[in-house]
Image (cartoon, rainbow, N blue to C red; front, top):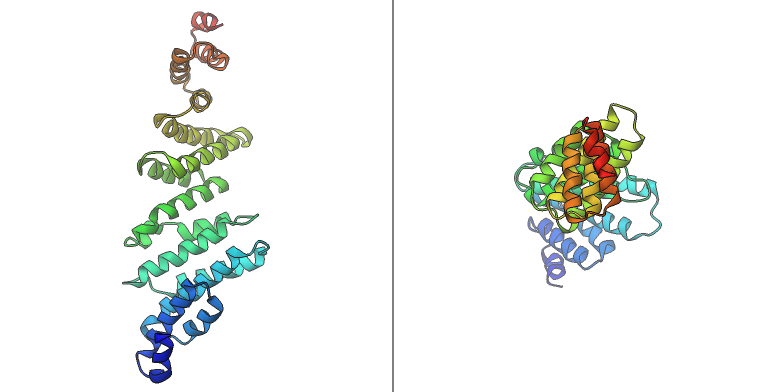
Amino acid sequence: NGLRAYLERFGTTDAASEVHYRLGEVLRVQGQCAKALPEYARVTGGYASRARLGGLECRVAEITSKTTATADERRAVVGALRAFVQETPARGEDEGRVAEGALLAALLAAKGPAPDHATVVELTDAFERKYPAATTYHTQALELRLRARVALGRSTEVANDLATFVKAGTVAGDRRKLLVQVTHDLAAQAERMADPNALVAAGLARTALTALVADGGSEAERLQLADLTQKTGDAVGARQLYDAILASNGSSQEALRGAARAAATAGDRGAAIGYW
């Protein structure tokens, strides 16, 4: 009410643009985007980029609340966000806003029945270098980029992002869920892709599983890690992993068979027979 009263009395002053922006923000936070958009539209000058992003946030809220949003509707909002990112210099206070716009566009592109992985990568590529001060968004940008690059099969880029992700901290909660999904997708690629890509995917899955196992992995994850270690040509390492499983569960038939295969592959036929 105070903001509206101000605009009624001083709507033609230099400060009116900021007040329109503030009023638009209040209305947006209250979920009244239909009323917020006209306020944002009246903003000029120093608050213009803030108002433009506020309007885009309204569009994102609208599209994400619709259970029947079409692919074209999603692409239109992603396109508007991309235009904001491309047309707004990421300097000073606007750096954080441009970073937020890029992240919102990437999040929207990643959702829906047909995720646009290429657009996600485009919007998050070199995100940390483009927006060094926007540290709040760095982790989410990395996670989105990693998922998208795995889906696109971009092995070299996945290796870099996966290494950064693993180094970032412990594997727990949502980070563990992401790493489990990445492992699943990479292992699936390793099974269906022709060499040499299959081996590359298997190696990346091994890297992800190593992090999972190091941070309290299940027996199933330890077995999968041993299998992938064998698949990538490290029979000695695979046997060690199978033996570690057998040390805690000597009746594991999967580990016994795996250890026998690994020993045979390494040329130790006596040990291979011993496992049987």
